[in-house]
Structure formats: C-alpha cells, structure tokens
Length: 189
Image: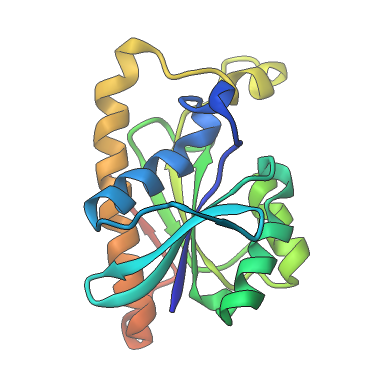
C-alpha cells in the first residue's frame, strides 16, 4: 500500500492559497480515481482506493503544514505503510508556477512541511512532487506570498500544473511499484 500525501493548511481561510497546492493536487487526483476523502482519523482527512490497480491511501493532514509529521506518522503506523511508500505533494517557491519536479529523497529545501516529515519520521527516503508556485520579489514577503490566494491571471497555469502534477504522482506510483526503473530526480514542464 502507498500513501499519497497532500500538504497544506486546514480550513477555508487557506483553501486556494499557494501553500495549499498539495491539497489541490490531491483533491484532483482523488476525484479522478474516485477516492473519497471522507474518513477522519489520525489527525487527517483520508480515503482508501486504487490508482492504476495499486492500493493507496490519499490523505490531507489536519495539522498546519509545519506540523505535518505527527499525523503522517500516525497514518503510517496504523496502516503499516513504510516511509519509502509515501509520495508527498507540496508547494515549492523555488520553481515558477507551471513547473514541477520530482525527488525521491533528500533534504527539505526550506519547505517546512517536508522538514516536519523528515524530523518526525527520522528519514528523508520518501518521494516528493514539488509544485512550483513562484517566489515573491522581496524575501521578507515569503510567508505572506505563500499564504495568499492565486491571482485570476494565474488560474489557467494553475489548472495545467495541477493536471501535470497528478500525472507525475501516477508515474511516481508506478516507479515505486517497480523500483528497477526508479530515477533520482525528474523535472516536469
């Protein structure tokens, strides 16, 4: 079994913010594969289902992003899923909107949700689909920027990158199921 994990912040205030692009991708993937995120345990909303014949748990932690680790640890323990069977979907300010990149292991690159996972799980050996949201011009504005909603002019690019990220999660899932074909990093359009 695999864990497909969208990172974001809970609550309506953050729904369409840049920081919640992981939730947006997971919602689209879940809808595509008819996985209902209607179970509420382990400090998460989650659902069980299949993607291309592989059993998955799709989950959104209900903790704030920088505290994502404990809910994920609970899910892994309860459902007996090893960390290397996680695909984390999260925002990345180092990539422009419209770009995605996959990593199979490594540091957190300043992403605090990923940092919480690494610290809590004690390993960096899980896959990530990094979804570009761009970077503000001023470094001091990063928090306000990632917690701001996407602008109307960005919605077409957002829709396309969400579709690309869903396809990358599906491809990563196939790679994890067949580790002979696994690559270190992969960049999307």
